[in-house]
Length: 370
Ligand code: NAD
Ligand code: AHE
Ligand code: ZN
Image: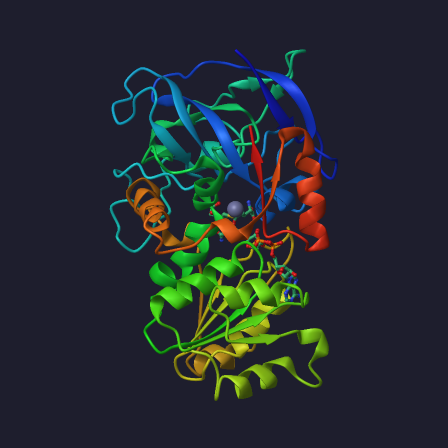
């Protein structure tokens, strides 16, 4: 079939909107009509050329929601008409990783996913001149139709609005999951969140849900504070306006250091600050941000010797087929908020404007509706 997509033809270039050819689903695969997709900073990270796994041409996008149009041979858990959210972290429920309660990192199709291919080692997308186009994070939601492995689709309730719950495909689950699943934050905790964008705001609403007493937000952009307050932020710090050492400032503000800190910037210097302002003896720092090829984190080992813990999280530790439908319920029941964070709605033709808004710090989430 033919469908419309925004194609990343080359690193660093704007996406190109074009008609592409899409082959139908093979065994274990599902054809999905994407109804809406968010723009996450990770899409921009890959588009820009910073991603060591970036492959071009590719159809990016990993924060979508849509409807099942066709199922491939052997697909049993989904049927035509089901509403779904594609999962860049699948859940096969059979691999060594899925069987270990300590991780959500299903590895059953990770190798081909990283090569921009479906599990049989081929791509379903090509340009009209026959040039193959790679998949991205197993999702490729910047296309009106996409083919996704059955194990990488969460079935969700049909009354949930696509233009809101698409955000659960990454930002909402990652931010809230980092607090609940990865850090396991306790009631009364003090926390510092670095980066108050689409992920950081969800960390903040996760911290409020978990009953944190103090939620400090750190961002270079003062304009991010207002929205963050709405989600539970208690103190805002702009590091460019702090005189002296930012670590010392945050340690003082949190009365000795934070119980939990979160990096949602992707900047390795910020990651160091986040670790070092965690409380001596027990403070945990969770890395969410994704850093460019070649970037490395560092600190004095003494920071860890004296009890601080450095952790990371992918997709907020969420097991997607099991937990994403529950997160959709939280939204539908008013337990969590999404609507105010979706600051811009765009058509596919306007998708590059969405990345410009992200760069200017003017959006939280821009959502493309098909
Ligand atoms: P975003 O662009 O919406 O937000 C980033 C925020 O960080 C912005 O508000 C920006 O002003 C702020 N910032 C940038 N540099 C800063 C600095 N030096 N100090 C303080 N604040 C700074 O991006 P997003 O969509 O929220 O994504 C955030 C990061 O999380 C990205 O690196 C993204 O790739 C990553 N991410 C990781 C996962 C995961 O599973 N681990 C999931 C989604 C996103
Ligand atoms: N390809 C990059 C790493 C990108 C990365 O860390 N991705 C996160 C999800 S970001 C979503 O917005 C993730 O899930 N990582 C686990 C995995 O297996 O990819 C690189 O540095 O090579
Ligand atoms: Zn993302």
